[in-house]
Image (cartoon, rainbow, N blue to C red; front, top):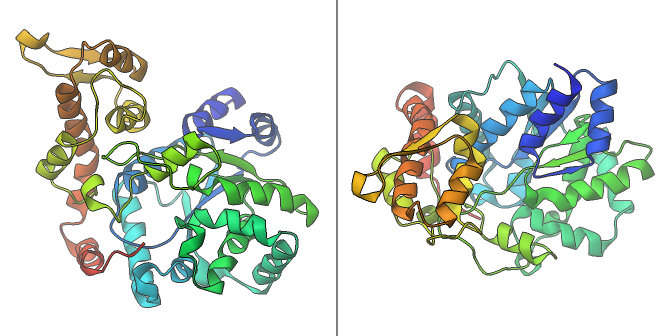
Length: 360
């Protein structure tokens, strides 16, 4: 695959790439660069985690990138996920791996690494070096990567978290950090601190944050930029099940949730239904057909998201018809994952995680 095609694959993933010039240079000098993303084992898998993440990883693999998935069990422990129970966190991590398998990720091309099994003496030495080169104020600003605000922090261990996450990048030998927009602050910290420690400056490929079904929410201080703050404050969260689509939801549940979703007529900005079409559906389907009665214009097909958005904004496509199509397409993507968890080991893991209390 030529470099331009590789760049195109990564650009489909990255809402922001810092920097494109560095990425191009990386592809010119390295056939299989390393990228990583990390996940705290917690709660049932939802649309951003299973379907959207799988799409992004698929594009990264197409570009010849070696992808490492960091199962951040100790991070979940620090963040009090699963009530801080390490045994439950471990079982949930096993469930996560099963979700990715069900989502169609080629696990032979992915390297799964458990944080608790990989953190050696050099890892912790690097954590201290990073901490010695980072002010308390900067660390405090980075705490939002945990999905929490400063006033929610009650344990000293939580201040270790950003230093550990920055250390992950170098520990894993990651040329590219390929995480969500909510993790941007610590990735930028790693870019700044890396050269100070005689290490490299990782390339940051930041993917979009999918919105929750309730639409835009009041900014709550996750970012200095108002627009990014709205995006991060409005993201789909497993801890808000009524505004979240899980991969275990039935066809009827998906349709019901999307039917009740925020989707104002003729409005594209902060519209979660259009958001799912842009970032998920049009990346998996070459054409999106919306079936309608003749009295409402008859069936209509779109070959691109931009076509759909234009027709929606000019009022020719009603929210109800858009929602119906979106629910059907999302169900098609979720159905194989849902069915995978109906038997065997996968079902046991699902039943275990389902019984656990969801903690933020």
